[in-house]
Amino acid sequence: MPRLAERKEKWTLWFNPTLKKLVVTKARHMGVQPVILLENLVREKLTLYGHMGVDDSAAYITAIRKQSREQSDNSFLKEIQAWEQSRSS
Image 1 (spheres, helix red, strand yellow):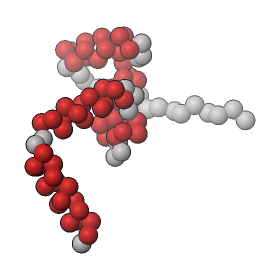
Image 2 (cartoon, rainbow, N blue to C red):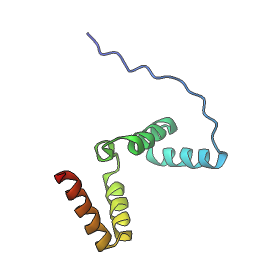
Image 3 (cartoon, helix red, strand yellow):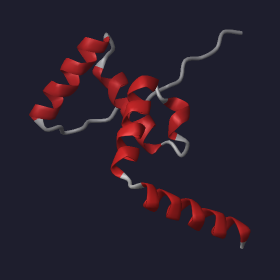
């Protein structure tokens, strides 16, 4: 039996014209439809385990590294210690 395609709802969204132009341009550059680009962005941002659904892993790793550079070593160690204490209680 053939698998039925997932039925999607149609939504109407009002979008800032500048953002719309940016999304359309980026979608053309990637070779996908704008709606697919938006779905992927929402999926990446709202997924509990964000690393699972990342399309561009290189960009994701670059963003994580950039964020970690902004955090000092001491604050990172304090964060780990707080996490260890919360796990042991």
